[in-house]
Length: 474
View: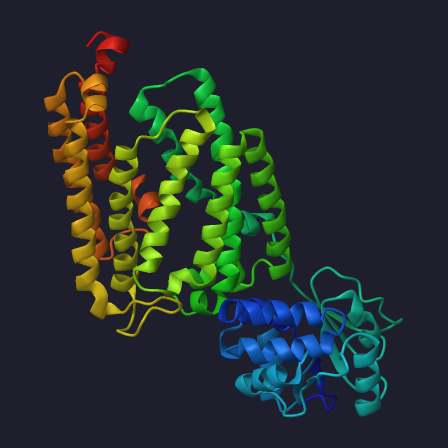
C-alpha cells in the first residue's frame, strides 16, 4: 500500500547532482555575458530575483541536468506505487515546474517566485502549513534543510550531513559528495603535455643550458595552471553542449560529479598560482600568459562558436606557448619560426574540428560550435593549405643566413621535410576519419607512429646542426 504522505524532494544537490542557480549563471554567461554579469551584480543580495532573471537569460534545458540516480529510483518507485512525489526547492518556480513535468512528478511542485527565496525556514514553514507537521517525508542535503527535516516525518539525507533528527525519527541515507580524483580529472592534467611547446625556442637555437631548463620547468608549471583554470571555465560554459556529446557528457561538471562552486574556487586558485609563477619569470612571460588567459576566455565565451575564427584562435593559443618559452629563457624566437609554426597549428585546429565532425552522431551543427558535416571538405582544404604553407616557410628558412649558420649540413634539413610531411598528412587523415583524440596535440604525443615521424624529423635536424656529432661523436 502506498504511503499517503507526500514525498518532498529538494533539488539542488539532492534530486540533481548540480545546483540550478549556478547552472543558470554559467548558462547565461555563455549566451549573453554582459547581461549575465549585470544581473549578478544588480541582484547579488536578492537571491529570489537573481534566480528569476538568470533563469530567463539562460533558458536551461532541464532534461539534460544530471540527477542523483539512487534517489531518483527511490522516488520513481514511490510514485509508481501511487504516492505523490513533488519537488520543492529554492530554485526558480519556472525551472522547478519544468523539471517536475519532465520527470513525471506532481504539478504541486514549488520553487522561489522571484520575491521570496524558498529555502530553510521559509521552506519548512510552507511545507508544514501545506501538509501539516510530520505530514510529509523530505529529502535534502544541506544544513539549511535541518529546519525542514525537523517538520518532516521521515528524513531522507543525501551525503554525510547530520539532519539532527528527532528521537525516533526514521532517517534514510543516500550516498553523495564528490572526490578529489574527480576534480583532478576536471583540470585535465593529461593536457599539460601540450606545454612541451615551450621547449621549441631552445631546440631551434640549441641553447641547452641547465638554467634554461629550470626556467622552462617553471614556465610549464605556470602554463599548466593557467590552462587548467581555463579548462574549468570552458567546461562550465559548455555544460549543455557537453551533455549532448557522446564522450564529453562524462566530464565531471557535466556529469555532476564535481559541484560547480568547487570548480569556481579551483579556477581562482589555479589562476593565482599561474600569475604568481609568471611574475617570477619576468614581465615578458607574465604579459604572454595574460594574453593567453585573455584569449582563452574570449575563445570559451564566444570565439569557439565562430567558424574559422575559432581555428585561428586555437592556432594562436598554441603559438603563444612557443612565445612563452622564449620569454621565460630570454632566447629569441625567430620570425621564421613564428611564421612556420602558425600554419602548422592552423592545420591541427582544422584536424580538431574534423575529428569532432567525424564522431558526431548527426549532420546538425556541433553543439556550441559553428561547424556541420557539410564543412568537412573546407576543413580538409584549409588543413592542406596550412601544411603546404608551413613546409614552404621551412624550406625558405633553410636558405636564410641564420639557418646556414646553425645548420651546416643543409641538405639534411630538406630531407627532414619528408617525415615532417608524413606526420602532417597522417594527422589530417586520422582527423578526417575520426581516429584521433579531441585534442590533436595530446593525440600526437601518444601516437606511436606519429612520434616516430617526429623523432626522425628532430634527429635529422640535429644531424644537420652537428649536435649528434658534438654530443656523442657520431
